Length: 260
Image (cartoon, rainbow, N blue to C red; front, side, top):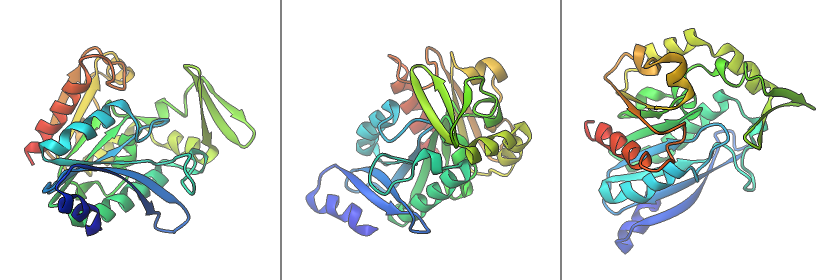
């Protein structure tokens, strides 16, 4: 996909491009936003969490800052309202992982190094992908044991042929396959995926979040095979969109990636 970068380089300017990438089976379109700066040889692929998207606050701010600091930022939408995109009710974590691999393969030839960030449920999506192809990863308050969240959520209820989680005034509608898959994603599976990861891994916990309260400093990095880094950002509940937390998140992430 050399044309993506050459257009920006020819004009000598920073660019934001909405790109449509077909899934491997051609059944859907992955809508992906590229924020690029001329001459960058490194890029970060951002994978959003459950109910999130390419407009997540921290990821959007990262995309506005890091291209000027050496990293193009690529935000992929695992599902979208746009024409031809996947719906969440048609997804599982395995689907997400395949789409991460598709986008990573699509953009990798344009860069010397490709990194990845996964927020919340974006972390298990990354962990199930071809993770060791990335130069390094940063997991933002990652969903460590999906079985503890979706599958065991007391707000989970059946609605027709789907499951619904109701919380904070919003409904997230999931397929039966998604919920059943999450029921099998227990601590042992998380540990096994971690042990197979040789890619340098950073975990950044939200100081007021569920995972730090429930499991302390334990997460994917605890059993990773490669180099690791661990940080806690106080004052954040989960999304790192509280005042003072977003910039710290971005700076921690960049500093980690700079080492590889």
